[in-house]
Length: 263
Ligand SMILES: NC(=O)c1ccc[n+]([C@@H]2O[C@H](COP(=O)([O-])OP(=O)(O)OC[C@H]3O[C@@H](n4cnc5c(N)ncnc54)[C@H](O)[C@@H]3O)[C@@H](O)[C@H]2O)c1
Image 1 (cartoon, rainbow, N blue to C red):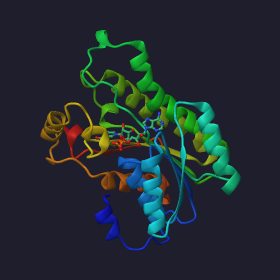
Image 2: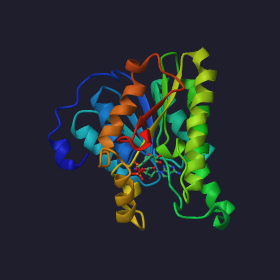
Image 3: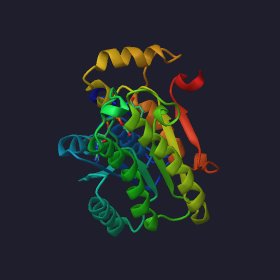
Image 4: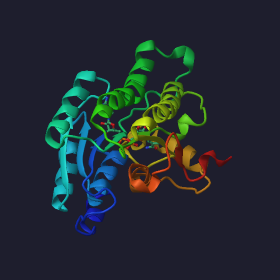
């Protein structure tokens, strides 16, 4: 959501996440930022994390401006020590965490034949996208109570394969299956785990790519609805999975892709 749209937003009010404590990774930009704003609007106290301070600070001040509750912390999701620090700060303050959104992610090179990839480059994508989500679940679950929810932001790349983006595809397929395994295990504790699978979304991730305009053309050309999603459209799906409206869903995949995978 841009500043102009936020200015037109009604004052934040209690709602579908009233009194919930939510942790959103990669919350300074794109889908994470839109989700933070929507969660706060729906009554949650929101902690957003990420690598760079300026965008996190901006999102938090936007939320404060609209009467919501938010804070930020610098965190690299691939580092277990960072997770321990963030989660203990939140747990010390609130005693529990109700919602975890594992949203932080990177694409890596989307045009590298497998044979040309280095192990380091492949590992960097896996460390952020899949180890990050694993560490999130591992660290946060001890502070969750029955009724809590975890949402892993995967991708249509976790549903269908594509040439060149093999590290990203492997990581997003991993995120999808990590969700299902965790869902089964954690169902005994009353914690739900679901994945969401965006198609092309207009965010810095795709806007800052080297070949952004040809990638956009290709992605939108393969999308039956003929457009990309806004981050806010994805945030509404994440809100659904985080709220009790999806109380009988766990281990499920919510695909929001304008029909991309319908072929
Ligand atoms: N934009 C799309 O078309 C699209 C499509 C499918 C899935 N997704 C997924 O949506 C999620 C959000 O991406 P986005 O599109 O909003 O892009 P984005 O680049 O705006 O957001 C990703 C965020 O993750 C943060 N991040 C990256 N590495 C990190 C790390 N190691 N530790 C902590 N934070 C880190 C970035 O700083 C950024 O704020 C990602 O998991 C992405 O793979 C995006």
